Structures are given as C-alpha cells and as structure tokens.
Image 1 (cartoon, rainbow, N blue to C red):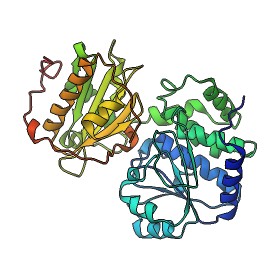
Image 2 (cartoon, helix red, strand yellow):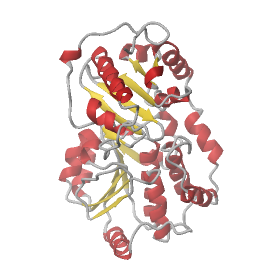
Image 3 (spheres, rainbow, N blue to C red):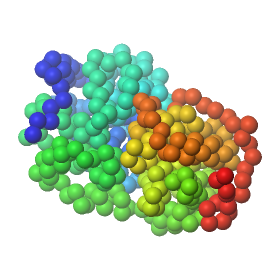
Image 4 (cartoon, rainbow, N blue to C red):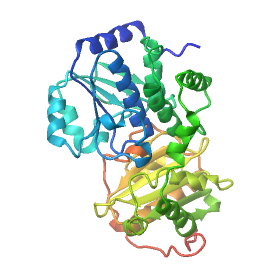
Length: 385
C-alpha cells in the first residue's frame, strides 16, 4: 500500500535539513496530549537513528497516564526550564513543529519559537497552518500527526530500523487522537500502519491499558460525580453539557489528565449529537476551558469559533472563555440553542485550535450574561425553552 506523502523535492529538502543540522528542537502545543507526545517521541527516535540528538520540548505539563511512553524522560518542560530552553531555541539550527498549526498554541513558549533563527518544519493535521516554514506537511484528513510521522519515516526509508521505542509512541498518538480508533479512523491506510507497527513488537493492549485504565480512585469518583450531579441533558436539542469548578476539582484531588476524554461520555446517550464540557482553570480566576465533541455531520468547530473563542476539527473542538463559570454556562446555553435552531447541522469551518490546546486567540467577557440558573435536579433543573 502506498502511504507516501512527500514529493521528490520535499524528500530531498527534508533529508538535507536533517543532514545539515546538529542543534535540533522538537516542540508541540500547550497541554500536550497523546498525539503531540507520540509524534514528537516517534520522530525524535528516528532522528537519533540518523545520528542526531534532538531536544524534545513541551510548553507545560502532560497527563500522568502518558509517563510510560518510551523516551518520555528526555522531554523538557518550558515552564520549568525557561531560560535554558530560550537559549536552546535561540541557538537551534532546525525546529520541528509537531501537532499544532499556529505558534499561539504553544502559549508562553511562543516568543522563543517565533524569534528562533532556526529553519522550521511543520508536521500537523489541523487546518489553516500559518507558521513560516521551509517545509509544511499539513494533512487535516489524516487521523493524527503521529500517522503523518509514520508515513514520513517510512518514506524516508526509516521503517526497517524502527524499534519498539519509536513504534509505541506513534501507535499511542494514533490511538488517543481517534478515541481508540472509534472516530476519524475509517481509512484502510490507518490499519495498514497499525499492522506495520505491530511487527515492531509493541503490545497494543497494554498501551490501551496504560492510557485508559490508569486513573486514580479520586479520578473515577470525580468522573462519576460529574456524570451524576453536573450533567445537563437537553433531549430536544440532542445535546448535553457539564461544568467542573476549581472547588470541585480540589475536592477530588484533581491532577492533569483526570478530565481527559470526559467530554465524550455524554455521547454514549442515545441520539445525542453534541457534548460540551466547561472546566475552570486550576490557577487563574475567570478562565474557563471549553471542550466540544459531536458526531457525524453535526459539526462543533463552528460553535467553538462563534461562542467560545476557539475552533478545531469538525467533531472535536475547543476554546476558552474569560468569565465566571455562571457566565460560561449562559454562553453554553446560547450555543446549544443555536445548535438546535439549525437542527444540529452547523457547517464546519477551518480549525484554529483543537481540544488538547484550547487556547483561542480572542477573549471575551460576558457581562450581559452574568446571571446564573439553578443547576440542581436530574437535568440541571433547567428548561431549554
């Protein structure tokens, strides 16, 4: 099966960039997810096989359930080593930007990335890339950036030398960005790649358990609390949403990753088309992170742009609101009303930010929507009409 992505000139350019560079930096978006880490670690291992010693940098913390990944001990956090990593970007000869389409997605690391004199290569599966690069490999139709990385390694002739150290992160990235291959994963090329990765000795069942069966007791209790006490289901809109406050997170000893995938749970309800989660930032006041999920042709990225200062994929998007949680809930009701008024068929638009990096560039306050409704009762005690 032909899974090549690059034309001959792109292959020549990429090989030349790698051969000519010694100081190489790999970076990804804020709040790294499985695909961001998986693509970086898989690509880093390939570069090591070519005699390079890449520096792998993340803007901030990543979930505990990804700490098993081979090579994770070599990852450096920008928020912990700013001065050292600022210098690394300043001296870099080549920077690979993986799993993000615009430099604003790296948040506090953006000045270091933007000002770096290094030549840049972008590999990503989000729409509308706007980073100034010598080579951009952008394929929004692909399942994940990790899939792109595998295809590139394979095309450059690196598959035979690939070890389990490189194969496991790539598989993890593909798995997590498709919800365990339950969405955006119907192309036969994906399963050809999985078959190839399995020949490297990875244990896909253990990788699944490492990611999805690795929660703390407090995390399970928190998730049960949210589904039981905080879930608002609006049957006539085929939609649901829930909120998670800072106080509630403290009650359940919240750590990074505990809410991962929680927004998908309401979509298990029969006939539900849209799910939205609202989560207060653990440190900053009046900052609410928003995640949206939808199914089939009921797109949520337009809602993310219109109401939540964000964007994303057609069925997986995110954003943020600069306001209180009651105000955020009011905005969410507006979004759901809009979704229902259009029978859930909202045209997809190019993405700005996906859920793993919900950091839309614009910010809003909602003083006109400052009132709060009671959220008690089976469906939050609210009347959709």
